[in-house]
Image (cartoon, rainbow, N blue to C red; front, side, top):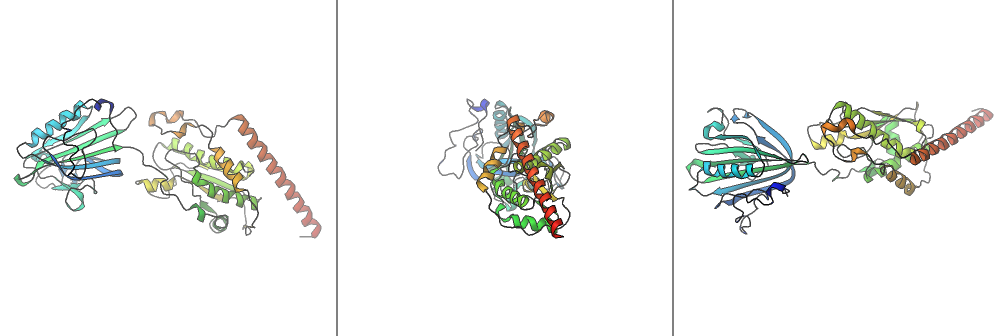
Length: 405
């Protein structure tokens, strides 16, 4: 659930005595109670979803000002005692929020919450809200009602926004709808890609037919480190490169569109470099591996959703060798050794293992930085692999010359 703010630990917000009513389907927000005598009528929460927060009145085509946010969401609809006015209820909420360090972003009263009589009467703020109306719409029926939107910003950048709509519906019952969202990154890599399907054979087919393929590497937001889920795909690519020692490839790194163009270009290059280092750790010569970063300039999917942004965080493999590659030959391969080496690549400390802020992007440390000992080992392996490749090449040319092939 929502975390507590330091300023709230000793603060009694409204009434907390009703928060544990056993007959109610839901509980109060951990940092904001209810007006005394109120009863929870509807409740809904989500660990991560998208919601629109009103920042202005409702117009003919919807809210005139609003902000759409992603994070942890809670919706609570209270039945408020009828002998208390919306003004009294909303003022108490306002005082409690301000004492807790919230800043009031917008508020309105009665018909001022709509631009004119042609304005819509309702809108959906969070479609999963249990408002009791189709599509989870929130009604803006104001003969006697109040609204406010408030925001709290913590020192670590996390925002908590609360929107409260209190009104008397058709002169009968009084409802107070409370929407709360706390922004935070979504938990990534909860659904694993089917990397098993990206085999050496399917890679070979893609390179012969299309000249490229996208690797199944689930990069987290702002991360260049290879996750354990990447190992199966990397092992298949290593096997392909060892079975075709003349094959040269280009590793193209990509990002989503969050962040500046210059930062994303650097991050995309770091992702391609992370794959190159994993391949070199298995003896693939660096001369066979070009790397380039395209930043956010070549998206595969829309950057307006988290699913699309996750697809855009990727590395693609492009064939640089002319001609068609021969069918793969089944050869023994030490996958345990490959897994160990791939895992060791991610042990290099980088500043990009933590979420970044816009202000410090220019000072980020590149994942390409390695301890000198690891660099020496990588260079030695690359030289040994290239030497063996050249010896094999000379031998093949000599035999072909003797046999007249």
